[in-house]
Amino acid sequence: MGRVYVRLVWAQIRSQMQYPASFAMQTLSGFLSTFVELLAILIFFRTFRQLGGWSVGEVALLYGMMSVAFGITDMVGAGFDRASALIRLGEFDRVLTRPLPAFLQVLATDFQLRRLGRIAQGVIALGLAQAWLQIDWTLPRALVFGLGIASSSLVFFTVLLAGAGVCFWTIETTEAQNIFTYGGVELTSYPMHIYNRWVRAAFLYVVPLALTSYYPALYVLGRADPLGLPYGARFVAPAVAALFFVAGWLVWRAGLRHYKSTGS
Image (tube, rainbow, N blue to C red):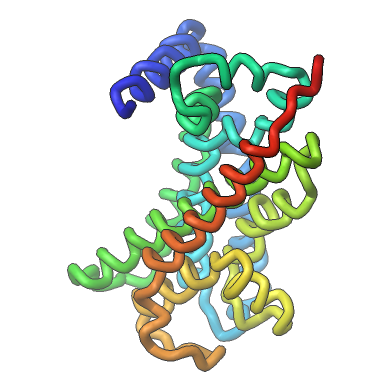
């Protein structure tokens, strides 16, 4: 199945590269539209030296983590973001008639290589953070940091997957999905302790992006936890993301069993 997926994605990449100028402009547009967010952070810190006790470099590190993580998800998992259109237009019927798992087909439906623009500006944020903070990248720090990005990306992907599963009942994408994807990127790009307890609880225990980003960042930066969770919370990102994915997979499977053709 993996080989089939690679072939399907490669066909999409070749299609997107048929017009190099258009691809370059779309990638640049994606870069600039999100780079404005980084500029807003830099402008903020020209006036205010700290945010909740965090410096510009520390916030840039957290922002870069989330931007790269979501950029990866947005590039790989965009097919699930448009699942509602497949269902509404009746195109999902064709998915079910093909001799491939529906999950694999939807995953390969929309591979957005131009999202490299968003990933690139996240990498720039991380570069700035390193220049300002001069982090000593020991192997444990690098491992926790890399797993934090991968785990955050998996959590974002799971939100899209579960949202697609819910679409089998609702047809249209729910706003809750956007709250935890685009809204989640914005919220978790800043230290979680600046928010009220309800927001913190939502991103700790409902969609655990704080556990996959904020706590790994605390470990890398050598900061104490103002929220008072056990020290081990800095290392649970992979396990939490895996459990969250299982829950999202179950929602997807339940929705798939529920599916009835729209008749479109």
